[in-house]
Image (cartoon, rainbow, N blue to C red; front, side):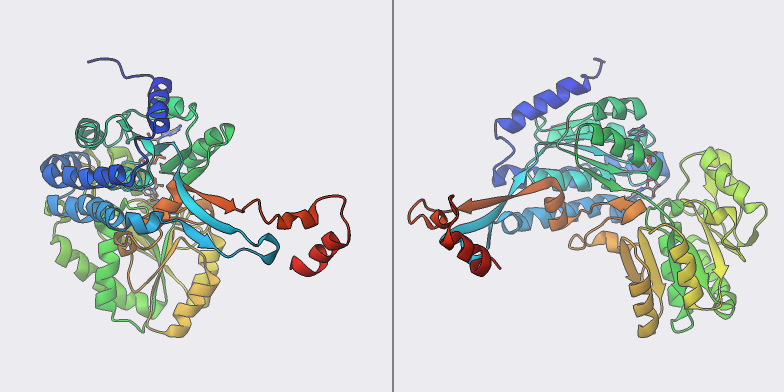
Length: 461
Ligand code: NAD
């Protein structure tokens, strides 16, 4: 095997290609998006096998949460590209008349996409689709912790996409570090806040703008106004999908004593209905990243009141769907993002107390409110802040290309998906065009006399 091409050479090559204008035409962009979709459809078995090897995802889950999400995003962008890229005219102030002003969306240049391991297909390729739709050349750095998927991406992307415009560079922190020493026009990072800080610092040294898609603790509020069986199904699905390793998974649950007492049996019933009596034997229940990841969470369970699940097999990377009752704000489970199949329940007197807990933490990626009471929905909407708000539903907003996906504050900077990806991966260039004759600007040329004073006082407002 040849040694990998140095990052500086790759970026230099991509920049030349970009400057030569190959990535600019709309038909090139559409063709790339169509090829991306075709790759995922034709080579589905390879992606399914890789996701099973890396994360024990079932083929259907791989399709639902990774492969088809990217296909839908690529189709969405391909269909609407012309509309999203259309120049927009803007009204100008009378002081500039006669003139025309408009904005055009321009590609940025060479973009770096750094992806995590938990949805290693979706979170590498959805940003890639946006970067290509915007007419950029792209370096994709998949996660070394999903090695089978990384390998498939490295093998297939150059075969289906324009390999002079898209390069996959595999590797871990060393590879990412040498990439971040290069001058990119945008860095799109998905991963932990810890690494996000390193990426933001490295990008700042080059004055490169960054999008950070990070994590956090997304809370769930449940009250007595909803059908608890249906709510339990939704919460169970969102929480235990991919063994809880979903950035927008419900992290902890806030509810009252009365609701908690009724909800726990409903959650137990949902878990059994979804994964059977022994989730270890279910083909639809995933595995954690590593034995260490299992151990980290298992250690937090030793003092907790485990009411559902709790079984572990670190060697098999297995931790059962687990619910812990009576957790307080000081519990280790409430100190960091759980990122695994453990759902703590924090009992509170009312919605106001729940909101105080949510606001005492960092702004999360999502807040989920299971309530049919409009006043409760409104108070959560107005008094909390998060990347997204789910009303009687969690996680599923990921499936909507029309909705912006991203965090706020410590859960992330910037957003993407659909038109929001075009905004992220392109520059909105302002254009002002004014004929030289008649020269209405003469009024503001020095020496500044009566007309200039009139313009300053009466025209500019
Ligand atoms: P991570 O931060 O460990 O790794 C993410 C990527 O960064 C990988 O490609 C890794 O190789 C690279 N990396 C590692 N060290 C680096 C360094 N020093 N400099 C530059 N890059 C480096 O994250 P992870 O463990 O893969 O993912 C889990 C985290 O990601 C969780 O916090 C989760 O909430 C978050 N996440 C967020 C989203 C989102 O869309 N907001 C999606 C998935 C995961």
